[in-house]
Length: 288
Image 1 (tube, rainbow, N blue to C red):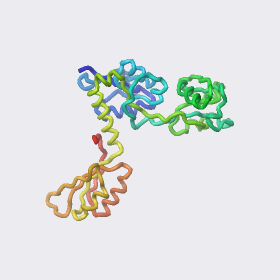
Image 2 (tube, helix red, strand yellow):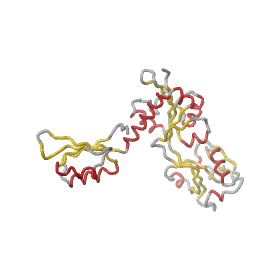
Image 3 (spheres, rainbow, N blue to C red):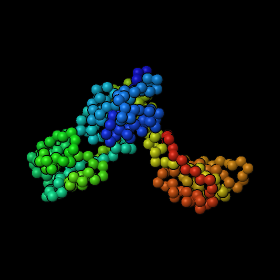
C-alpha cells in the first residue's frame, strides 16, 4: 500500500499544537528547530511533510500531500479544492476588521468606499466588504499588519487576533468580524477515495485524542451501601464500573470518566459519601 503523506505547519502559531497532536497519536514529528522537512513513520506507511501553513492547502490540492493541518482562514483565503475532514481543538482565532482608536468608524459598514485595507487575506477581505456593498482596495502585506495605519499604508486593517491584546497595544479598535477560524484537517479529494482506510486511521486517532483531552479517569473506593447514588454522582461514559475489593465486603472500587471541569465537584461528592483512595488521571486516547 502506498505512503500516506501528512503536511504540518513547520512554524508559527499552529506548529507546536499540531506537533503535540501528532506525538499523541504516535508520530514523533520534528520540532520547529529541526531542519528535517520530511519524516517517515510506521515502516514507511506514513510520511510527515513540514511546510508553511499558507502553502499547505496548495500542497494538498496538488497531491504533494494527502492530508494537511492548517488554519481554516488559510483554506478559505486560498480557495483551493480540498476536502475539510474535521475541525481540530487548537488554533482558535478571529479574522477581524480594525481601525485606529481615534477613527470615527464604528462598524465595518461605515468603512468608506475605495478605502485601503492592509491585510494578508485579500480574497476574504474583498468578499467580506462586498457583502456589505463596499468596494475597498486591499493593500496586501505578509506581516506586521497592525503597523499599517501608523505608517500611512492603510486606514483599516483585516488581521487575525486571539485575544485582541495586540490590537490594543497598537492603538487599534475592532469594528467587525470576518470569520472565526480554527485548525482544520484537510484532504486531497482523490486521496479520500484512493486511501480511505488509511485516512480513516488518522482521523479516528485524532478524534480519540480530542475526546480524551477534556476528560479525566477517576478511581475510588466507595462504601457498598452508597452504590445507588453513583450513577448521579459519577455518570462516566456508560455509567461507572464497579469492582469488588479482595477481603472487603463493605467497600467496592469504582472507575469512571468525567469531564475535566467537573472533577473538583465529583471529588467533593465522593468524599461526602465516604469514598477513599480517590485517584484522578489524564486519558491519552478515548474512542467513543
